[in-house]
Length: 325
Ligand code: HEM
Ligand code: HEM
Picture (cartoon, rainbow, N blue to C red):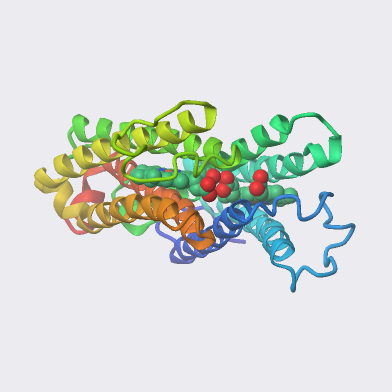
């Protein structure tokens, strides 16, 4: 029988990367399902048209999107169970064990939210408005980001750098950079929430041009809920960019963080530019399915990367300075 250990376990770390790969596919499938409005391709849940292998799911795009999303959800559920068992058997660090338990609970809850979104749709309930199902869909969209964030946190905690350095308590990152990291993470999460409300209210094109919002102004010519939420997402993009650029600038100026996080910081800048461009392209292409889906996925990557870098800012000193210092 294996004993619990607090030293680096390469297989566990690679399993975490494997998990992140499948989570990415799951987010893509979910995002695509929403983009092409195929969420109700099957009216039932947990089965799809009463089956695990429903007729037409390989040949009809909406069924393919929704059913493959459900199967991927199941796969990620199994991965979360495996990670939980693995860490409880082999990890002596309570933080990792508890995080993997929290992850499993979140994945199960996320599946239930997805199921509730389907079962409570007005096609099933005959309600006069679909607000209940839409609320579940928005919560499900945000829950997905938390699932991703928990997988990322466990991956960082199981990485070699973090583990080799954990016993040292001093840190080298100034508090101001850490707080900017936290503020950026919160700002992106709120931006994702506003994006999800906009998407599920089908308000993505409520302002049909970009960067102007009306013929000659950055402000819309008229206001209603759809226009307001759409405009809030544009203002949110500016706020997110300001927070992220400040975080990047301060981290870059501080030689310790620049040396330690150079790849992560460069990736973050690239993701921010790509995300703003994909947002604009979503409008310019009149919501091309792949563009809108990649905008959703890149939003998840932007959040995950900012969260991981912020998390690393709390790493023990040696984790940031390199393994042998
Ligand atoms: C860990 C498990 C899961 C994750 C991480 C996940 C993630 C996602 C994501 C990211 C979206 C796109 C949301 C958006 O773009 O606004 C989505 C949509 C959706 N998911 Fe999941 N999902 C999971 C499990 C499930 C399960 C088990 C179901 C079962 C029915 C489900 C049903 C749906 C439906 C119906 C949509 C489309 C919602 C709509 O268009 O209104 N999901 N999911
Ligand atoms: C860096 C800032 C941005 C972030 C983090 C971000 C994130 C997101 C996310 C995650 C979604 C999908 C939400 C969901 O359903 O779960 C979304 C939707 C959307 N975003 Fe952004 N976004 C940003 C900037 C922009 C910009 C600059 C535009 C340009 C107008 C834009 C336009 C849109 C549109 C039109 C949608 C809805 C797409 C649809 O209806 O399918 N976004 N955004």
